[in-house]
Length: 330
Image (tube, rainbow, N blue to C red):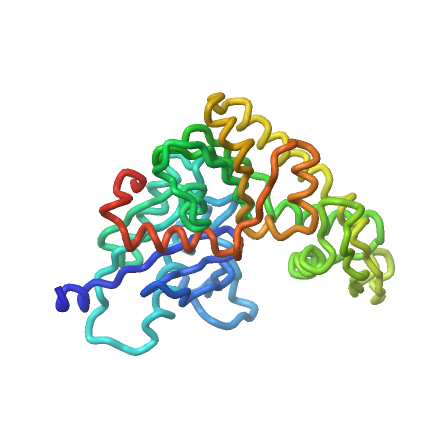
């Protein structure tokens, strides 16, 4: 067994639109933005940027949009696990999570990218199922559990019972849309042009789902060029403003949760009302989101411990127990 362990490397990958997390030997060894820089002349991945280089996000809305860039990104991140040169590359056994709304073509793209990057045994697990396992729920129990995973590209909503997804809804409204809402709002309301990174900083510092919070954060100072004059300006942004500008997108997430609940069998619905609904993914960290959803839906919402890594943790558990969870894997 020792020899085969040496020849095979087992890794779990949470291939996210915004961030990719790799777990190896039960530990998070890579947690990097899902971005790759390609030299336009050689089409090879590089570390630095200049005029000939293009930065690409290979995943859009939770699925692979650029096959070549995705393969190079996965390959580059796997290399981070083994920075030392070896005589040979070990065969890779991978478990990768995918959105529950993925089409067969999208699933094939993930599988092909992973195999091209060195995967010998490639297994897939649906994100809400991985999130439920990562949260610590008993997915095989004969009772209903509901998970809402708000990632970068998609929000995955699923009711899980007896090791299967009973109802699921995957919508392409998630963290990236909230970031875009903030960029748009700052342009319209304050006449200031900001990039994705600044919008992300605003979301982290003063992002909120409610305009009245028990522990409100202080205003966040945004610096950037005035759209009309191109001169630098400073604008203080309050959490109330951000709650107002995110309202539309959060309402769409609420509607999707209600729609998934409508399709849930009555016995499982009763379990969910008793147990509450679990929130995972980066979006779960939005201030006041759990309270806003409770006020709207009247079911308690719990935020998973370290929600950003819940899916990755569950993928890691599935990797360790491939035989036990074989019925969950594709």
